[in-house]
Image 1 (cartoon, rainbow, N blue to C red):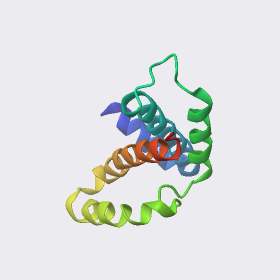
Image 2 (image 1 turned 90 degrees about the horizontal axis):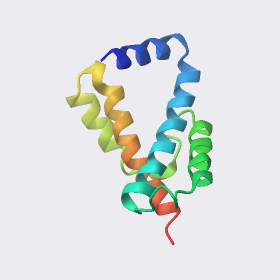
Image 3 (image 1 turned 180 degrees about the vertical axis):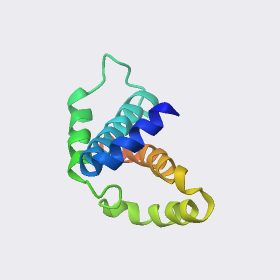
Length: 113
């Protein structure tokens, strides 16, 4: 919980910077999950450049995750459940967890052979 509180304080103090870093980190994490858990590449075959590209894309979409047109099917349902069922102080965590899952899918879909 201390890490979560530190994140919340940083978000309050520097919202734009933290959102950019969060978006990039979530995109990168999604790609790592895609490569390691879905594609089962292993560390030796991990494409670092691909992960860095995903991080860069994530940092470029600050209004993330709404910026990606492909989210329009998933995102309204997630937000509806989030606003009606999740207490306010947990909503950001829910969005971030869904974002990691969505980013893993996007990375896998974009890099399928």
